[in-house]
Length: 171
Image 1 (cartoon, rainbow, N blue to C red):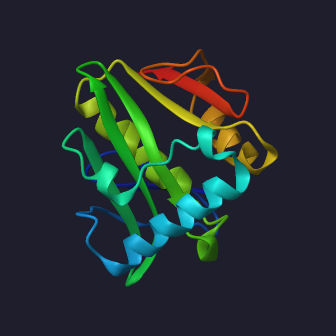
Image 2 (cartoon, rainbow, N blue to C red):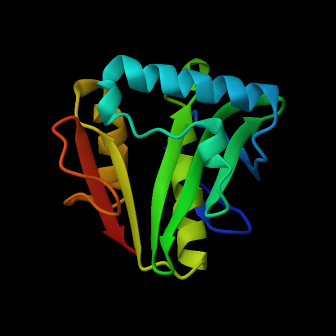
């Protein structure tokens, strides 16, 4: 069974058992978000060689061209994601992460949908991302494909890397 909820930005489709998240702009100063980003960076380094890890640190996420959101259910932080402006027509999805305590609840799906709506509202014509090529990243690649992302060549400052996959979608 699928539920449709309307919010001020978009229609969010939730599968049965999924939760409705409070997705907020985040200033990256809270204890919970710092810990989630530490978890994210550790996991990236566990699943990819250091030279292939493109996850951003807390300080890198504070750049003015990056908008960062966190997803909450009450007082619980469930995940995060960011949108980086590459140019006036092209954005990049960054720092998509679901807390290990909240996997398989639709968190990443809602965050990605939120980021896509934000990219469209900014007038971007393209949205791209980089993720890992190893098995640990298969759920993320499946999610991105479901939203219409297609494999592409490296974009922006990325180079060919057998440990990375590049994806893009037209908006």
